[in-house]
Length: 114
Length: 112
Image (cartoon, rainbow over all chains, first blue to last red; front, side, top):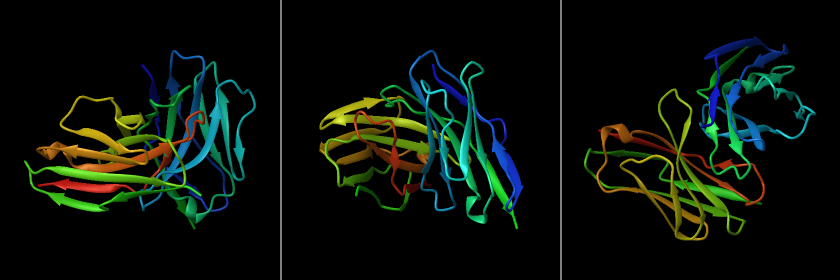
């Protein structure tokens, strides 16, 4: 069974500072994908970043980067230069090779303070 | 470009009434389609997915069913709603062979 755990229900960061959101997962598959999704107050899920398990290099998308530790089954999201628009719920997700079975964590609510 | 629509956006239904939520995707062919439910303050739970017309896989046994009558249309139904069916329902699509799932705007369902 695939499981995803986000141990931080809430986090806060000062505008322009850096924050890291944690995620751990468990899977028996060798090929899989990890994702971070953002859910703003509108509640539409927005894909932030994706990491392929077979890639050693950490994914980066502008101010968003991940720290993927495959042996430790850890997948954290770093947001640099935080902006007010980054305030949202952030969900970590794990998908198998065909990704018809994506599993989500419980989410972390990020507050950005001006 | 591809877009995904869901309707209605909001729905309030009495217990025991039927349900039909619709999801359509534009700008792509033969997508994989997904229904998720999000309870208040929780993560997403996969309910159903479909890899083609008439092909439905159920992840969680429950009071709901899904159908895919057309290539880019995915419908979530119930014959008799329960209070526990309340939640936020999200539809998503994916291009086969690519990992990313893209979500629609969702439907907020309240069962009274």
